[in-house]
Structure formats: C-alpha cells, structure tokens
Image (cartoon, rainbow, N blue to C red):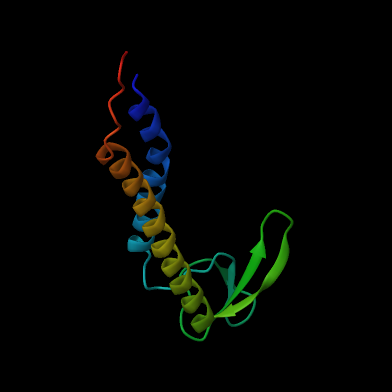
Length: 115
C-alpha cells in the first residue's frame, strides 16, 4: 500500500456524507410534514402532511414532552431551512472530499535521491 493511498482514505467518508446530504435536500418535498401530532378541529389526532390552517404539535418522543407547536407556514419554513442547510453541508463535504484526493494525486512528490 502506497503513501498516496493512505492519504486518500480520509476523503472517502466526506464524499459519501456529502452525497447523502445532497440527496436528502434534493428529495425533500414541498409539502410540510409534521414530526409530531396534528390536532385538527376537536380531539382527532393524526400525523400526516400539514394542511394550511393546521397546527403541528412537536413532541420529543424520548420523554413524551411537548417541544412546542408550529403553524403550516412555520413548518414549511423550517423544512425549507433544513433543506438549505443540507445543501450547504452536503456541498461543503463533497467539495472537501473531492478536493483532497485531487490535491493528493495532482501533487508530484519529489523523487528521492539515493546516494
């Protein structure tokens, strides 16, 4: 195993992670989805896409406590912000993962002189 191949190893994970984040951002739908429970009129509860005028009660399912509520507009904005964050994070990681091997393979190591 050469020294160059050892240098390429740390760049594989950022490429995979960057691709994952970019895929997540690209496949995020436009319809806001509730990660908690949507309370319609009355006591009927369902967990589906949020419709205009509905409120999403966010829950921390590990301890069963409420983490607040979001309206349709707030949930849509939160999902758009999350997709934008995924785009930035994925782009950075992918760029790092591609730039590293490019530098490693393009850089010519000076030949060693043997005396």
